Image (tube, rainbow, N blue to C red):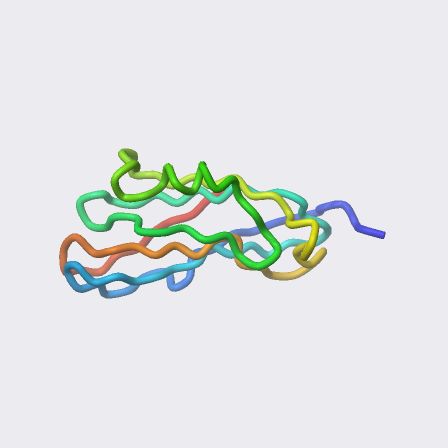
Amino acid sequence: MRCPLKSASFSVSPATQKVAKESEFQFTVTQEVDGAATNAQAKVSFKRDLIEIVKVEPGKGWKADSSALARLSPTQTTAAKLQVTLAADKTSPPPTSGQSTLVTVTARGRAARKVSPTSSS
């Protein structure tokens, strides 16, 4: 029996990293839940003059609409916010309690500097 969701918190890891111009890097958006989570929405803000989104992959146990992910490609993304709605994958559901990765984001640095994506949900 699943417990209803009581609380959830979200984080980006690593919170800050040095990025070289034109180099790719990754960060993850994770959630910590107390109870059962069957869907989630990851929102990440970033500065388009510093980074471009290359790829977004749902974490294990989560799925996202592939056409929505395709719209997040660098040639399609015009906003400085990334928003992905996820649903629990019925074949491999996320844990009913604890931490899980919602999405892994691959990005490319547009300028050499330190970047700090932020997340909310």
